[in-house]
Image (cartoon, rainbow, N blue to C red; front, top):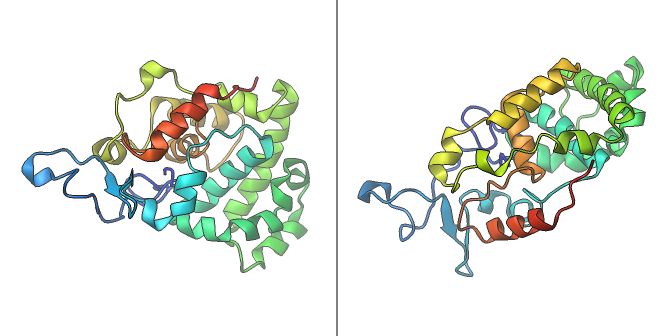
Length: 244
């Protein structure tokens, strides 16, 4: 999922939009048997006989209907970046369960409104037990709203600028399996996106967080090769009209 930890899908801590890679490997033995020299595909077989990513049982609806599907709306992209920041050091499922509370607390992530938050709003949010009450992360969301507004004013849209960092096909792996998933908490594209955002003053946007972000919003397709959703995402990306 890196989609779905500052390590949702990676090594240490779960990243936004990415599943915690500490998830036990429940791959069907008919598909993967590392002990027998058969590579771990990262797939499980569901009750209907369909192959899905190993982490799907922990977040089935998110896996099947949201993670990896292209997102073009400025507000939802800003929300994804904010939630990725709040998720740092936590499991993504925790943030997912709190997402509606976050939306209510942050004016549905309207970046114009969030950019105008004052210390009074910080204290209001710090008193909200339904969200993650971390002062640095709250301040980061407000700062990033200001930076997002500047970027949108400068370039025309947040979506257009973010999607301009989509990696070219030649930079993508031939196949996504459990080894690739576990071995690549970042990518060349996520490192470049992180650096570009930091130059513009954004915070809580490290390369691992941005890799999870790119997975979650469909800039890359990192459903396991063979997962029923992998082909669906490929089709969605093929017909997706890039902004900008």
